[in-house]
Each structure stands twice: as structure tokens, then as C-alpha cells.
Length: 485
Image (cartoon, rainbow, N blue to C red):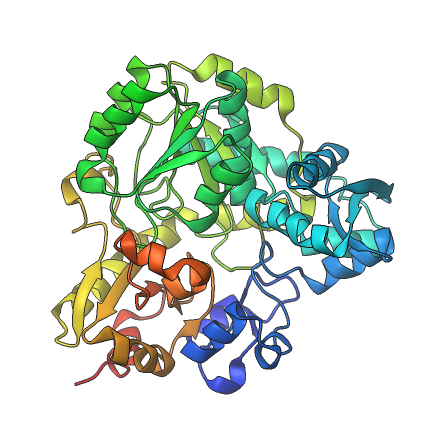
């Protein structure tokens, strides 16, 4: 069952546990149809894990990648990486965290071998940096194949699409193997521009965005209160130098945004670059060029839409005062690690991204309004209502508010699991898919730090919906039937 078939035949029932979303060898999501399945996945319960045929590739090592790792170094914990430079970075990360290892090379992949304990650290590097080997690249390695001859031309066409979306030149676009790899490339660039300084994150972030800064960078401060973020940022800037400031427009899962109109002047006065993540909004909906110095984005989500390819990009903003030095750093350190077969799918999908995004916007707003009016729902988070004036300040004239909707049911401690279990939509990780995709976001992303998340205002009982391209009335019937009367 391919992605578009999941609009009519969602995988939401108990027997769907672990099945790929979509039915594809290279799918990047998998079905977690019940609340207890999410708990079982997070707690690594055998009865759950043994049913997984795949998973989100930074968190669940794909079977093809595992086979490639065994060929590279099957006597110890090993992961493959796409270049010698990345393998060296992984080895340095291991040593920084008290473990050792060695690198080896075979057939276009570089393996890092370490101890069993070191293997957990190595997997953290894989997860946080996103500098991974895709399942398609692993398959090519196992079959003794190289990239398609047309790969450079495909990458060029993809850069052209992205340059048009962001209104920049093709040379301002730096393709990456994943969205987190784009964050890593941006972090590496600002650390070279302003070495030895920590970073700051504005607003409650996606989990690995903060982990990357904390564990790979020089430390990070989280300012999660968007209602007072400018004041807290000013205090922080008065106290210490920063390498950069990171933010999401809007944030995930609470969908609020820091006011870049006020933040950007504070940063530029101190010579601090701003790195923005627009994955949830997309360049179709927002224009961050008056404020962001770099945009680090995932192509896996809305650009692909079908949840069967991984990719990311860093966009250099020509309007930024840091444009020349940051672009020079990125160019000097860039490697073309986006595997050609992944680039081929992303480039094809990018062609109709604008028309799909227009439909996502319409469906997202319609469902958000329905949820907001339902008596069983305590609160709905959506960019049209969360820090609305701030989002409006960067929204394009034709743009909308996206299709990510988060809601909290009334009496959520008791009702949220039952509502989630009854939702007759696809359920699993990721977002931006053409099919609606639900997850108990806090449980899935922050299971080991639920108390911390709740202290930041993020309830453990949230349900996040990435609204797809289904007929909205029919989709609402599926959602409404899961809600108490």
C-alpha cells in the first residue's frame, strides 16, 4: 500500500502495529496504533519491538543499514557512515564521551566500530546529527551498486526547486542527507564563525534540535517561554557571548513562534546569527528572509509528502549581514551526502509541493476549527491562534497556517489514550505526509523526560495531528468518532 492509498485505508487498528507507513521498503514511518504501543516502543518491550519492520531512520536502524553494518564490522558494535569525514566526526564524538573505536572503509561506506557500550553513544551521534546512511544507499552498497550517473544533474534540479521556493540562487542551497544533518551543518558553520561559545534555543523545540546543540555543540540554553523570550534573550546576551540563536517557526508541538521582528535586532547588534527551522510552516507559507541568517530544513516532511525518502537543506539568506562568511564556511565544508536515489524522489515530489501545500493549509485550518469547537477538546494549538500576530508578520500573502494541529482532550489523563486508540487515521512518527498522521507527541518524543516537558508547558497527553489531503468532511468524521460525546 503506497502513500496515497493510506488516505482511504489508514493503518490504525491493533493488528497494524509495526507495519510501514507507507507499504514501502524505504518508508520512514511505522504504525503505532495504540497508546500502549507507543509506550512499548519507548520502553523497548520485546512484544512491540519485534513487530517493527522499520521505523524513523534516525531512531530505528533500518534492516538494510544493519546488514551493511555487519559487512563492515560484524564483530563489534558498528554503524556505517556516508563519508570519511563523517566517520571521523562520529569517532571524535565517541572519544568525547569516554569511548574509543576505529574506522574502516569498504565499497563507498565508512564504518565506525566500537564496544557494546560505545554503540549506544554511536547511535546517539547517528540520531542527533542525522549524518546517516539511507536505506537506499545501504541497499546499493549490499548490491555493489554506485549512485546513478545522473545524480549531479538531479541534485542541481532539486537545488533549483528549493532556490525558487526560498527566492535565492541555486548556489545558496546546500543539500543534506536529513533535516537534522541540515541543523548540524548550520551549527558547524556558526561555531566556526564564532568558536567556543554556546547557543540559545527560543521556544520549546523538536527534541534533537536541542540535543544537537547540547551534545555536539558547546552547550545550549533553552528559553521556552515565548511570551517573555525577548527579555530573557536580552539578559542572556548581556551575560555571555553566543555562537548563534536557533528557533522554529512555528514550534513543534505547541505551534507558537518567537517574534523575529524583536529578536533579530538584538542578535544582529551583538553579531549573533539566527538559524531558523521552517519545517512545520514550509517556505510556501512563511518568508523568513528579513530575519533568519540561515534556514535549516527537512525535505523529508512536506516537500516529499509520501514518507519514503530522507533529505534536508541549509539555505543561505542573501539579505543577511552574515551571508558572505557563512556561505564561504558552508561551501568549504560541504559534501554531497544526499544519496542520488533519495534526491531523485525528493526532486520529483518537489514539483507539485506548492499545490499540495495549498490543500494541506485548507484541510489543516478546517480540522483545527472543528476541533476547537468540539466540547470534548480542552485546547487546540494552531499557528493561526498561537502568537498569531507574530506568525502573521512572516506569513506570505498567499500562505496559510499549515496542517499541524495539536490538541488536548478534556480530562486528558483519562481520555487521551482512549481517544488516540479510537482515531481511525494513520498513527506513527513524522509529519507532512499526504495521509493524515497522528501521534501522542510528548510521549513519543520525550518519554524519558516527561516531567521536564510538562514543566515547559507541554502536556504528556497531547495528541498531534498532521492533517493530510483526505476529503475533509470524511476525515472529520473519523476524528469526531474518536471523541467523547
